[in-house]
Amino acid sequence: MKRYSIPWFLLAAARVFLGVIFVYAAYTKLRESFLLFAMAIDAYKLVPEAVAVGIARVLPWGELTLGVALISGFFQRLVTTCATLLLGVFFCVMVHAYRAGQEISCGCFGLGEQISARTLARDGALLVLSLTLAVVAYWSARRSRVATAAVATEPALAEKP
Image (cartoon, rainbow, N blue to C red; front, side):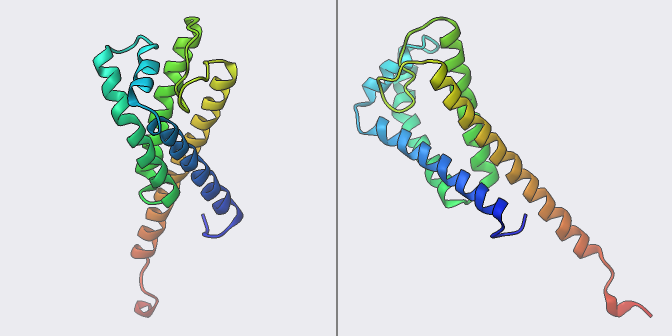
């Protein structure tokens, strides 16, 4: 994909948008006590309480790191893959809770937002966006490698008789 083309700008804007979402999600969790977020994690009833506390201490910093990395554009394949995996886990856990009829806070942007069809649609859209960015990052890297290999194997023009 050519740099500074319209598709390039759209993908860069999507990457920055997703990065800002991760930074905001981290900010909303870091400004409150980690114990409140641990209670939201524990409400899902998927991990022991001690694990929920550990996740509550680490996850916001991971989200912040992912957000900054997405915004910066460095290591796109690694970062978009990590973002996709994280959003995939979030989405699966939320769908599980929604189908089980649990009326709990999703914990996405702090406390107070109950899991609903709206939150599932939002997180599903973010997952699709992240997956798209990851596929494009891998596809672009592959195209670049193939083009570089093709140029390296072409015979030099000066060698022709």
